[in-house]
Structures are given as C-alpha cells and as structure tokens.
Image 1 (cartoon, rainbow, N blue to C red):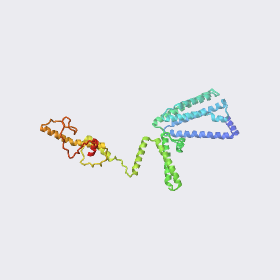
Image 2: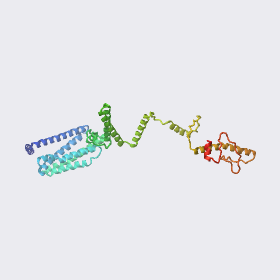
Image 3: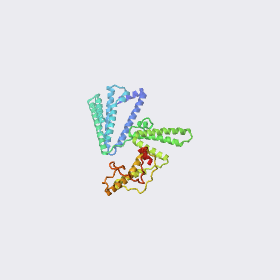
Image 4: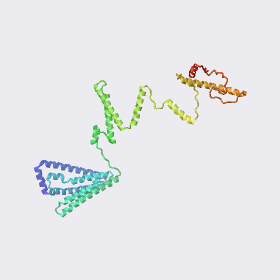
Length: 391
C-alpha cells in the first residue's frame, strides 16, 4: 500500500496538472456515487431497508473487483499511471450502467432483459481477469468469490426491485424534461412535431405567433408604417396557421366548416339574418309528406291567385285549345246519344272519346256551347293556326 502511495506522490510531483485532473475526476465520481446512494436510500427507506443494504453490498463487491483490476492493469498490461486511472474500472462502470438499466426495466413492469445478463457476465469476467494475476491461491479464491458474490447481489437487488414494483401495483412516477433537445427544436421552429405531445406544442407555437401578430396590429397607430408591416406579418401568421390546420385536421370537416362560415358571412353582407331552422317551404313539404301517409289530404278553401299569363309557344296554345274544345263537346255528344236511345231511333253507343262523329253514321251538327269557342275551318288556314286564332 505504501508503495502505491509513493508511486502516486512521485507521479504527482512530476506532472501536477495530471494530478489535479485526476483528483477532480475522482471527486466527481465519488460525489455522483454518494448522491446515487442517498437517493436510493431515500427511495427504499419506506419498508425497504433490506433492498438498500443489498445495493450497498453489491457496490462494495464491485469496488473490491476494481481493486483487483488495478493490479491486473499495472502488472499484466503494464499501463502508465494516467491510463491506468482512467481504464482500470471500465468493467465495473459497465456493470453499474447495466445494473441501473436493468432496475429501470424492472420498475417499468418489464423483464431485466439483456441488461440483467450483462450484469452477471461483467461481474464474473472481472473476477476471472483479476484472479489470473493473483500471487497465491487464497487471492485467487477471494477474487473469484468476490465476483460471484457481486453477481448474486445484483441479481438479488433486481428481484427485490421487481417484487416492490408488483407490490406497488402501479408504475413509478417519471419526469419530463422541459428543455429537451426535441422540445427546444419544436419551440424554436427548427423541427415539426411528429407525435401527439409534440404536435400540441407545434400547434401552440403557430397559434402564439398569430396571436402576437394580431396584438401588434391592434396596438400600433393605423397610419404608421410599422402597422402596415405588422399587418403583413399578421397575414403571414394567419396563412401559416391555416396551413397547419389543414395538415392536422380532417379535410372534409374543415371544408364543411369553412363553407358554413362563408355562407353566414354572405347572408350578413346581404342583410339577411342567418337562421338555424329550415326554410318555410321545406318545412311545409316535410309536414305534407309526413301527413300524407297518416290522413287524407284536405283541399285548402283558399282560392289560389292565378299567376300572370306568360307568352307560350304557338304549339302549346294549340294543344290547350284542342283540349278545351274536346272537354266542352263531350257533354253534348253524350246528351245527344242519350236522346236517341230514349226515342228508339238508335242503339246505345259508348260515348265517343273524340268530338268527331262516327264515320259509319254521320251525326247532325251540334249547337255550339257558349263557353267553348267554335273552331271554324277554312281551306286557307292550317289547323294549328286556327287553334291560335280561336284563342
């Protein structure tokens, strides 16, 4: 032990800057280890003192292994003091890292996974390497026993952590860093959000830009040049906000909403008050359709006002004239046929469907009704023009 102290003292006298750096690194490592031990003790003091003691014992066994590796690197590897200080405990540091990761996996309700296997492999490997440079069989036995004890203690610590997680029945609380590199990238506009949590931050960033631009426009003088620039920035922020909304919303719902807003604005500009209820003709049609299946339709006693006569084509007027003449002559033809049947001069015949007499037996000319216009045929007037003249 005195030989190591003398060697360290001589190295520090020859290279003081190296001694200062090594001392700082050792102080940081020791402080981090103590802080971790205190935190573990606080987390495990509530009925878990045995788990804390197991953790401390595992760390002590790891420290004993590192002492054996110091001798291995000095005699077998023949490394200088500086490299020896930084490299002698690399397997123990890896052991601590894998053990910590395995405990985190167990606390999360999962298996230790490959980290648990690496804990055993690193502990046994460090003990075997340290035992190869032992000077006696007692030292070999101690090195091997220390490695086995360290591996078993780490496994026991993992089992205790798993049992505690099952007893709690819930996942331990986690923290979320407010200034992570992803959060800062989204907040500063360097990246766009890809998942739900970052998407909310991106939406808030775009919305905040629009609100700030609108506030700047309302705060400045309407006649100033700065306000015109602020209006341009507001338009840019609004366009960016609308683009972000289109990317992160349903396009069908967005178009429907924009259509409703445009319709409401158009009605307001026309002076029409927008109403949520359906128009009156549409409601009347719906009520008539519902009532048609339940009860017979009753005619309205109100006489409809005739619409103003609109000029129609000449062929439409001709067809209407023929229809009126046919309806006017049908009663007279039926009365004449009935009179012949009563007098016995003719057999009962069906009422003809047209005003023209039967070709087999010509009928005498019928008197013209006062309500029906008479159609006068002349050789020079075509039939269609005659119907137009009668109207």
